[in-house]
Amino acid sequence: MAELLSRERCLQLSQYMIDGAAPGSIAALWINLDRFQQVNETFGYGDGDKIIAIIARRLDEAVGHDAHIGHMGADEFVCLLYAENESVVTELAVRIETCIKAALTWDDMTLHPSASIGIAMLQAGENAISLLQRADQAMHRAKRGSQRWLYAHADDTERRPTALPARTELDIESKLHRAMDTGGLELHYQPILGLDGSIESVEALMRCTVDGKSLPPGIFIPVAEKTGLITRLGEWTLTQGALFARRLMEAGYDFKVAVNVSRAQLLSPAFAQTLSSAMIYAKVPANRLELELTESLFMDMSSTVQENLCDVRATGVTLAIDDFGTGYSCLANLKDIHAAKLKLDRAFATALPDDPRAYAIVKAMTRLGQELGMVVVAEGVENEAQMQALRQARINGMQGHLYASAMSGDTLLEWLRTRTQDKTRTEYDHDSIRQ
Image (tube, rainbow, N blue to C red; front, side, top):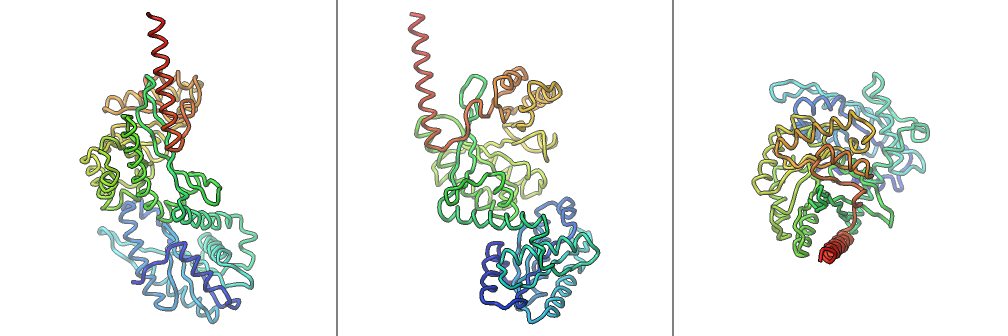
């Protein structure tokens, strides 16, 4: 099987094919597997990825040397080809539909896959992004209707309100690649404080800058997860977080650096080795790192994920459950994941002190987490009133702008030095008064 093109390579190849080509001579087929979320929910995302690989091999065999196949992320593919006429493209669409819908057996269950296909033929003056957008929009029309494949309208990108997200995703992915290649990635660190004011740990948060403009994490992280770039970003974050933990040690500070890890990273059988390599490279002991488990992980607790979590604990690196109480998190996670820390989603702190129901939930989750031997931390603490309510709920630690925003490594070290000097000066003044 030929190697599948990445989203970025698909865009590059389609633009290369388009340059100098006559209208109607290039076709793009956007292929989306129908109801594939049901497959992931039934078998888990690990097995889902294996089923995707089987379908990818089928596509490769169906198109042969006539076209190029790219994986656009999750359950979507794109097929690019030079086309003499529409009948050639239609014939290929039928072959693709036929190869996908052949039954396959997985875990003693027979699956009957299907796909919706959108087809766009090159228009005069059109670029690669516009061509792929029109194919994507035609696929969405096919999915809403009864036909398995449809040709794009000439004005799809102008009149379809959903065209912008597809273009934006491609643009964000391109910017992420540039950031990785040009040093546009950086970790910022936000302190987590205990009730006595001591620093319990700092959370590493990724920042991305391209051409002097910041790309918000809420925008680029979902795209990275969808396109598979999250694995590369995660490995980079592990290494950089470990290196900063070493800097903190050398500066005389005794607390951990917490690094977020995604489901995609923990689905790799080599994750524990990657973690160990980062610690060896940074020359940092396991007790200086903590892994925060993002909520996407809880969609799939496959055997690979569970083995990796066991291996992580065996190294001495602690685990924290992040954003607990919303999304995919549930009480079963507290039972199944032997975490040392429970971080309550910021939505709870935001509701305090005015919402008595939110306070009751925080108090109950705090007691439950502590009885399971976990440190309980509230995220998103913004003001004194929230802080006082959380103290009354007997929370262990807090994180938020009330104490400190996320800052670069150099800025954090300066903040820590100033904080230590102020504390020393205060203690000296108190001693002088007592004398």
